[in-house]
Image (tube, rainbow, N blue to C red; front, side, top):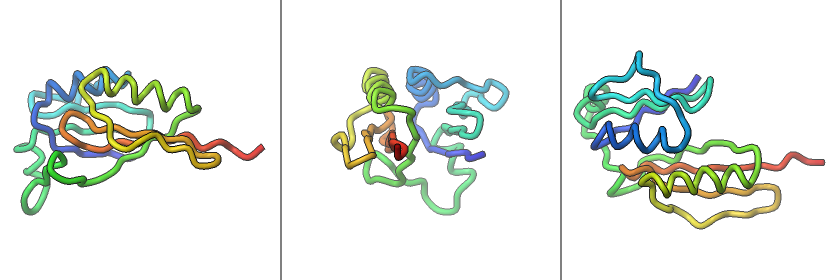
Length: 128
């Protein structure tokens, strides 16, 4: 499994954003300062209030709104799935990031969450 830990300014806004994308919350690991977002059976996003996130790091907490701190990429089954997820992200408070990318068998697009964390969504066609 992979756990993506993200500092956020507003846990409730993050919950609304990520559930708006179609992901679920695991209430057992969520509280007032943490949202445990289940992306898949193997991917979990832990959205932690910035002061709670600081408990787990040495040094200052980076600000993804000021500079790109990481890029997380999710795979999609089709170009339509790529477009649908980006569309939901923009409807629920996300912002566009880079332009849509079409490069041979790869089709991708990207967005940021309300805090500025970058997410790419990529479909890679299998050779026929």
